[in-house]
Image (cartoon, rainbow, N blue to C red; front, side, top):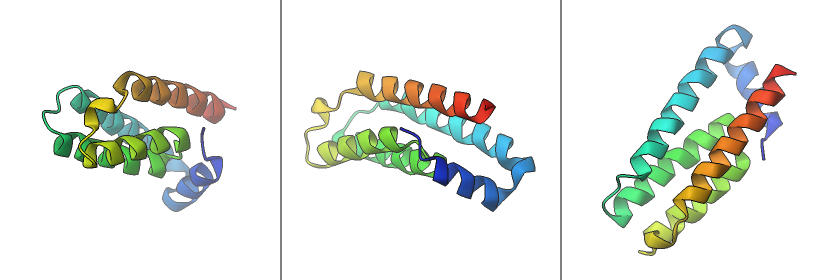
Length: 106
């Protein structure tokens, strides 16, 4: 679910002191992006929102969430965006966030 190697890389890239702040910004941006999913009007907009979320998820090591975003982006690009399960996508994000936060607190 979480790519902990990526988390270690990110921590090394930005330093321990700034890591918490960067994580907070990433999580805020992802949650705003999830909010935009609910208001998309076209398959193109949905694909763009999912592309953004996929990139953010990869940066933060949210592997499962990123995979779902990629599948949704592909569906939206192929004009089948109505098949994207936004509820499952959001649930995966919430579960990933919980696992992530628990892992960081260890």
